[in-house]
Image 1 (cartoon, one colour):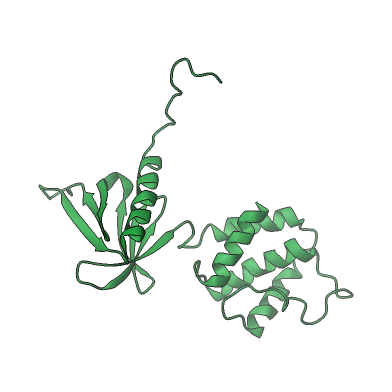
Image 2 (tube, one colour):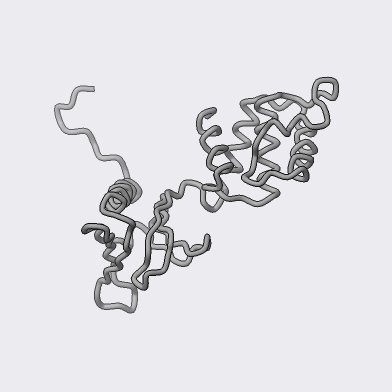
Length: 200
């Protein structure tokens, strides 16, 4: 739990996991509670949260809001603060999305996001399309091109293949591998039984 919190804090600070001012303040206040415990006016000076970094462009206003929230958490244990942090972080729209730079068929810069729900397409930080794993029939790559074959829709007769251009062959292969893993795992109904004669 502790290491997951550290990873998410790093993702938020670097901008990989964007969030609003309100969410930055809330997550920051849980971080302070987990690290310092209850607010103590004798121990904590007027700038006690400035040693923490919560946001890419941290402001004094954000720090004041974090202090205001932190003062209300008397009696909350570090473990509870970490759980509250995780419960709120998992609600972020980009939580659990592995982003990859790409270009669409028209050469426009996009980001391909691999998540538990499917392959997401972002342009200028806005999601413009989503392909759920059950809708994707085949995932492939060739050189720096990445392809997905889509199951026909309700009113379509044929499967369609959509291609994306990645920066290089290695990036294309990395995206393919991540997609194959997600595609296989998140379509499982139940775990596969161990082979017969398998020693436990």
